[in-house]
Length: 135
Image (cartoon, rainbow, N blue to C red; front, side, top):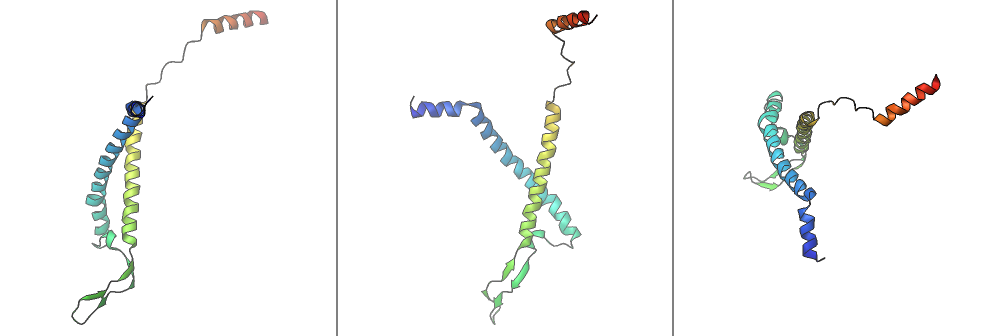
């Protein structure tokens, strides 16, 4: 079997196509949740924190050096924990929304509870024999 035919067989499998569709839908879903976080959640957090953008939060270790004309000579050295916090909040919210989506999806997918399976005739016959031997 040639390499091209093996590759065709590999691509034709359902798993590869399903994975590709999942990645594309996941990327689009990630954009939706990111828009939710950036447009609704983070402005609300900024409002309650005094109008400060969370991404701008930082701890300055060494301020920027300016010359006499006010031009920056050396950039500031800062720990930008706000961008980390923003990314962590994005992750938690994306994970929560995906959890809710999968929970609803699984609820719709779950089949209705079926009636208990009927006992096979041979088992019924064996039970009758057992009961008659006990007498």
